[in-house]
Image 1 (spheres, one colour):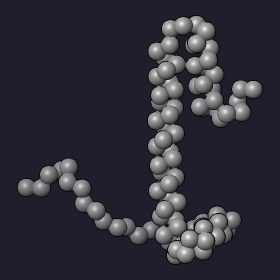
Image 2 (image 1 turned 135 degrees about the vertical axis):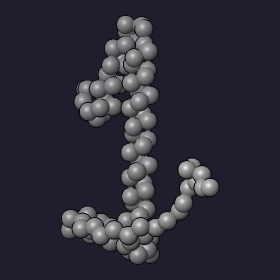
Image 3 (image 1 turned 90 degrees about the horizontal axis):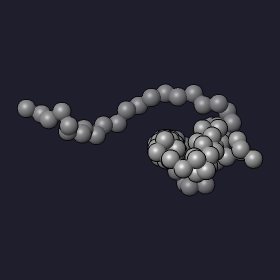
Length: 93
């Protein structure tokens, strides 16, 4: 009987159409690194997924700090941190 938690490593193939400007950037990166464009796409996708996960974790920790704050003065700062985390660093001057 196979375990439901066993990881099976497989490859999948998909066809993707890129906007021309993005495709040019992928080709530039691939050429600089000496990679085929497909490898550049895979590595860029992995980096993007990692960055997304880190951003979600950062937002979660910022939210937890905001929700657990009891000092009114510090709460104001935590609120500003939440605003920046959601809307970007330029959201509050």
